[in-house]
Image (tube, rainbow, N blue to C red; front, top):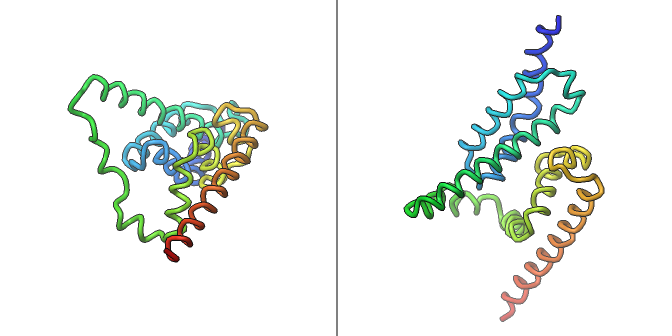
Amino acid sequence: MARRARPEWIAEALGRWERPLVRRAAGLLGGDLERARDVVQEAFLRLCRERPERLDGRTGEWLFTVVRNLALDVQRKERSMRATDPGATGARADAAPGPAEVAERGDTLISVARALEALPDEQREVLRLKFQDGLSYAEIAQATELSVANVGWRIHVGLKALRERLGATRLEGATEGTA
């Protein structure tokens, strides 16, 4: 009986978490969807080796933690490879979205993205998990190995910094038109 529930559990997890996990991995890997899909595939392969009872209803948090750790491993490996291969500098420059694709999303989205990128990694990570992936504070805490209070603080500080940056951007745009 437990064997029959297992494929259903994996299929349910795949349906619920695949897209948010790919988005998360792509965010950690500089927008590279192919590497992100590889990371998520590896996470689901690891999930296949787990028992549902062991995760105790925390499948999403477990998957986000595994994807985060796998993506960070990929980044570390690439950094060490670049350090040993002097010809590899700039090899990932074309993986970022082109200007036409970015322009389609509108000026507001561009401003928010720029402001978000200017934030420290710790704040950017929790904000993306919260607002792009829709995780709760508890789920973010589990995925990042932080306390719930620390997650809340990082989100608060990150949102405050975003508001300040976006306010300054709007102010600059208004004064440019009057000069």
